[in-house]
Length: 106
Image (cartoon, rainbow, N blue to C red; front, side, top):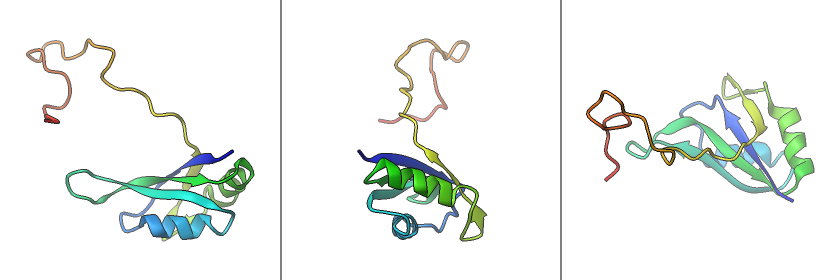
């Protein structure tokens, strides 16, 4: 069974290929993706790697958490499921009924 890993504290120059190459040192990488800002395309400083097995994933966490990569100490741990945002209603009180940062996604 595959294991998804969160990788944080990446430099803004780190690419998805850099991430794939690093984690391939430990085992088979299914996917590697650096999160990018939707508007600018710039790295957001974190990413996700999916290792093909739980054993490879645990080995990668042990090997790379706290290790230097491109001048930064990595934060590496098992990814948690994404929390749903905005579906609980409420919020926005005192702001004219608008919730959020004032940006529109439409």
